[in-house]
Image 1 (tube, rainbow, N blue to C red):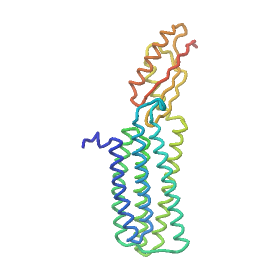
Image 2: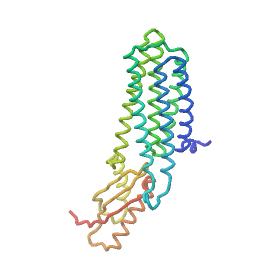
Image 3: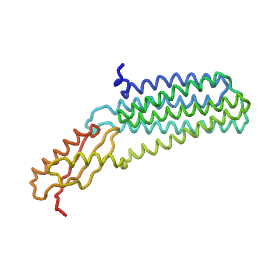
Image 4: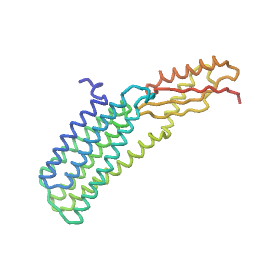
Length: 291
C-alpha cells in the first residue's frame, strides 16, 4: 500500500475501526478479569470510538456523493454532521462513565486490580497515540473535520489510558480508591473534549465565520485579475471540507455589462483553479465610483 492510499479518508477510518474493535474487546476483558473500574471505563471509551468511527466512515461515504437535484451543492456537510455525532457520542459516554464511577465512591466498592489491567493500559496508550498521529495527518491532508474529530477522539483515549495506568498502579500499591478516581478523571476528560467538538462543529453548521486568513488568501487570488478595481465584500462558508464563495467585486463604472461579466468570469475561473477546496463561486459585479 502506497503512502498516498494509506492516508485516504476511507483507508484511515477502516484501520481505526478495526483497531478500536480489538482494543475494546481487549480492554473490556482486562477490566473485568483484572477487577479494574478504570480499565472498564477505558474500554467503554474505546467502544464509543467504534461507534464514532463507524459514523465517520458512513459520513465520509455520503460526503463523496456528487450533487443531485435535491442537493445541488453536493453532500459535503455529511462530513461535519459525522463530526458532530462523534461529539454527541463522547458526551453520552463521558456522562455514563462519570455516574458509574461516582456510584463506586458512594458505595465504597474498591478493588485491587490485577497485573493484566496494567499491561492492557500500556498497550492502549501506545496504539492509541499511533492512531491519533496517523488519523490527524490524514485529516489535515484531506481537510476532513470528521477525521480530525476522530483523531482527537483517539488522543483522548490515549490520555484516558494514561489515567487508567496511574489509577491501576496506585490501586495495586495499596491506594485502592485511585482506580475509580482514574475512571472519573477519564470521564471528565471525555466530557471536556465533547464540548469542544460540539462547539466547533456547530459553528460550522451555523455557517459561522471561518479563519480570516482563508478569506485573505481567496481575495489575494481574485485581485490578480486584470480589470478588477477592488473587492467590496467576500463571504466564505464551509461545505464539509470544501468552500463556497460569495464575492462582490468592483469594476470601472463605464464598463459594459459584457466587459464586467468577463472580469467576473475570470475571477471565478482563477478562484476555482487557485484553491482546490473551493467548489463554487458566486461573483456580483458592482461599479467602482472612485474615491
